[in-house]
Amino acid sequence: MRALVIEEVGRTRMTEVEAPELSPGTVEVGIRHIGLCGSDLSTYKGLNPLVTLPRIPGHEISGVITAVGDGVGAISLGERVTVLPYTSCGQCSACRRGRANACRFNRTLGVQQDGALTERIVVPARTVITNGTLPGHRLALIEPLSVGFHAVARGRVTADDRVLVLGCGMIGMGALLGAVASGAAVTVIDPSAEKRGVALSLGAAHAIDPTAEDVAAKVAALTGDEGFDVVIEAVGVPETFTVAIAHACFGARVVYIGYCKAPVTYQTELFNLKELDILGSRNATLADFHAVIACLEQMGERADRLISRVFPFAEATAALPYWDAHRDRVLKIMIDLP
Image 1 (cartoon, rainbow, N blue to C red):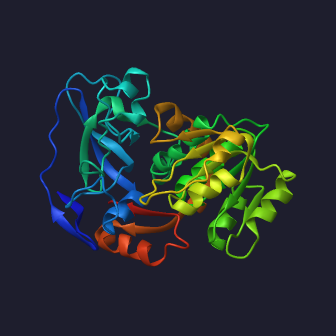
Image 2 (spheres, rainbow, N blue to C red):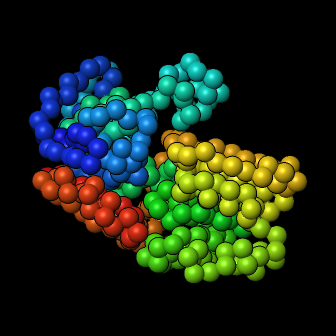
């Protein structure tokens, strides 16, 4: 069967791989849609230290059940599904505390192991989430949005909070939608006019252009010179890591989703003076997936504003180069399989 492989830095190709085999407790998923993730783009550019090449990318999955292994319960052939793409060991400190999304030994599809940008995959039945209400292409939006929803849960966002989201990529959009679903007033910061426009159309109260506005003055005006109750960082560069602290109010929560690949220098007195809760956020949980499903069902066709371009599987080798050349306006690239 065919698969897209990131063969080396800056190079993808279609290749033939062995078809997966069922084992007890597993199901086969025929892939119908795959969303490309920022981690896939980082892998393509040689900036993802968690990946060794060659690698089949893809963990934002929409498909149908095409075969069922022995010992699998109530999963039927033909059901539409998405997949939790993470693993958990069940034994490390995070798993023992019920936080399997932060498993020390996690191996995400498309990152530490080959992913789903292929015609079929076999996965443990326990990782499959069936859904008969969302159209197939929106099922592939669940995983990336759930990462932002998880950050909102980590930040304990409520309707009483003023929330700032740094970055309007897909993960930031998930944080925006999760915070809006919690009833919070949300401000976003992003240099892309196109992404700010989508954020405003999806519920952001304010959108700031850091290339054209005095961000500190705008934050002061929006918050009565206090800062935000919750700041969610979804970019992953040193500047946004430190800006998150600056724009947080006294007693705030700061949540980092972005994976910063360079050292960050802080003036740490603000940690103490503001008595900040500084939180990391990794992956997502089953509860986050279900929260996103409810959100997408409520959004209907508005959710399609998140999809920037669709490539057919036969043209998938062009998808990552296209994203790399149009990063300022791409939110989500999706691959459709026949």
